[in-house]
Image: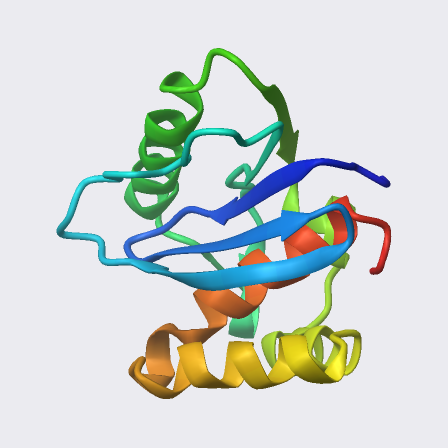
Length: 151
């Protein structure tokens, strides 16, 4: 993909990661706490919305993700997409943009692909988050990198 204009990438979940791009530059990234609604997402003026769509897959040790977790993820993704009317919408499966990369490898790759100032801004955003939820923001940034052709 090589989307242009203002692009919002969303990684829905209990805690939802987001990243905002203008053409191919990261403007910001953050997390929407699972207990709060999506107030302000997507912001006005967004041309493109990418949402990672939940996908059943085998997780560590050959276990499958619990069905209720996937239902919850699908609901959160639908909440974002359902409120969008005046922009291009793209639904992307995890395997489409990141394949089967382990979380640590994916996170490292995201950081490696950012320009210096983007990395500094992302680091500042992540610093205020608990370590166990940072991957949501990193996935949203990775999805954004995919959207703008930098993945």
